[in-house]
Length: 197
Image (tube, rainbow, N blue to C red; front, side):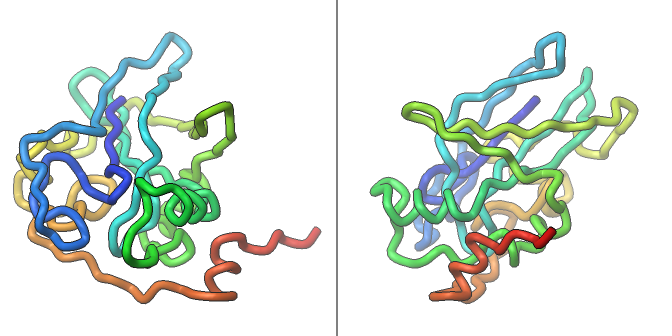
């Protein structure tokens, strides 16, 4: 399994034009990217930092399940907005000059993916543990077999990466900056009401 995500400030390794001002380059870098083999039960565990955010996307982690030389599943999983909001506003390493603009309730990729890729998160001493159970079709054979090498860009034809939009500045695309929800509307989006019944 391959896993990759942005750092606390929303920057990806392997790409130029990173950061809110697009002035940082991490081409040739490999931070927050990893690969591991699953155990005999199909489980795998990664130790990493909580991902940050960037314009136009909610908090997410990319992953790829690989069987032999072929990827059989490429997707993203999403972390709870309320926890992300707490970390982004209260933890100095995550704080930014502007409010996060995209929550899961308006992120098109998260909405299309649905609840099946929402990570379950529990708090433990000095860390959070996010889990996601996957059902994988071992016969699947997507076109792209591996995530891009750092600095190589996504996809041979310059298209968007498997599993979603490229990071800000990656692939020559500029992310759309939606207007951040504020006040009561933001609170409702962060902690949606429970369904009756």
